[in-house]
Length: 168
Image (tube, rainbow, N blue to C red; front, top):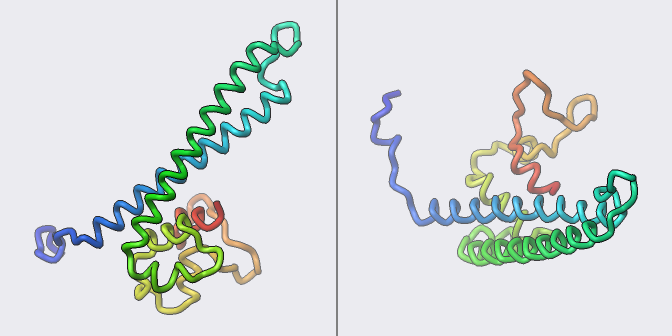
């Protein structure tokens, strides 16, 4: 293998750029989802008075109200941003033939999950069998019947981002 072999450097095609755009939109969508969820949990904790105790152990209502209002408005704006990225993913998916032919017709397969499958599995022909695809997505079971988990010092033969896309 020679580093400067001609087959190593290939020009980007429009398909490559479309997949890169789709992957970026998916990453930003996930980031906004995680942040909005954590802020929503903070609002719930604030409404219970957990975070706003003064030194005497009493709830400081003024701080709790102002902070809760701010976090709630921030959560709403993050939700709007998340929806914008979902719309962007839908526009990109409309240009991808495999989405129109296959993924769009699968019940429960929304834009975010389809984006994950298309982004993390660009070539279905790489898999010898459906079982190989299931193992790559971590939908398989071990011989003991257990679900595989990542263990220190052992390589995982699945794609973590694909697994999280389906379970998130």
